[in-house]
Length: 293
Image 1 (cartoon, rainbow, N blue to C red):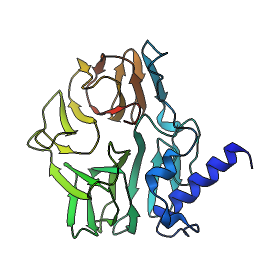
Image 2: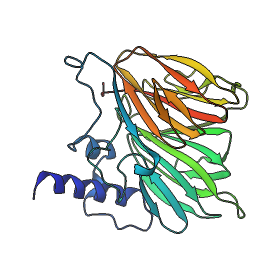
Image 3: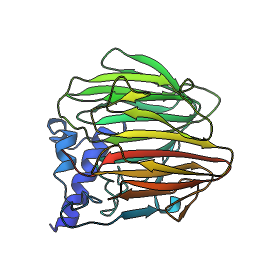
Image 4: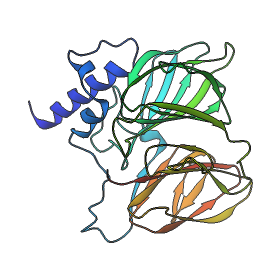
């Protein structure tokens, strides 16, 4: 079997077994760590060589180039390879492994399924999501909230549309953790008290006393909603990090690159960069390490 087919089959088997409730788990998958399975794959892309690359690097992902699937109750777009969508050039951006743009039908959702050694962030964009997990947590996560789970040594959870009359739309984001086998934890917050008009505000960091939720990774997330055109300079929080810019609504420009709704743009090997926002723009910035610790 050639290397490309080996990677593809390993990837699909691992994700179908742990993500889709209706899928059949491949023999032996339950004994594998999600983290180890993914990290052992060839194709951990968009990782700069710190010794050789001296100038700014970028990667541009148009919205219509994402992987997509329609399962009836679930419509999803995958920025990076996931489940049945496999693209060796779209495995990740640094430690940012998954960016799924989900739409779940009323009362439908994912039954109990496992995760380990992954930092999982959910951001509802419309509607509300009902959550239950093996740690005893039960909650409704709605538009205006941010949810985080550190899967660590292992958790099981379910997530369903909490409404019977509207779809729930959300971003599901996975990051490789800085440290493996931590104690699992769950948290969610409302961002209404930290939200700011016409500027980016922090919703996630590595620090428990910062604004937003915290995770086991040197990552910083910011949201921004703009009702007028502005120019903003973003400064990296840590040397060696990059930022993946995701346009939720409207349009923007990053270092001269025009971006439209649901486009993604990664930038690294810079200390700072400029974002031109436009009226009606809503933007998520995900600053992440470009290589594992």
